[in-house]
Image (tube, rainbow, N blue to C red; front, side, top):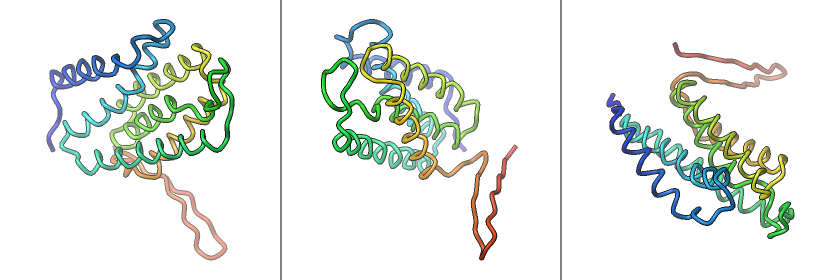
Length: 181
């Protein structure tokens, strides 16, 4: 198995940060700008980690999860018509920033373990906070986005570290958990 070097990770993060800052140059304040940048950076880093580890199966699992998340997020926004706190439009629920970043965070956690997942989850929580701070969303909007993103990643990601399973046989149901150490 090929692993990505720390130098490659640094270059990937620098590239992702520069590219992701372009659309958020006119945001209200630094918290909002950083949250806007991280929306693109978290999935880019997740994809880079998969690519760097020569894990193309994982890369495509992330791509399917992110595409599904984006389509479902936009579909819900178009059908629910929840007004944003800043009254800019009626696309508040669910938060796209939260859904996209939590998809990548949960993918990293499921695919490669907590060492990758915890920093990504913390980053996603900051992104969610930045959306509420910037008056773009309410907490329920970012929570809805987080749940949507996690569910999508859970559905598409094959865990390399642990598995949660549910099975029914006749009148009996089983919940199982397997962890790889």
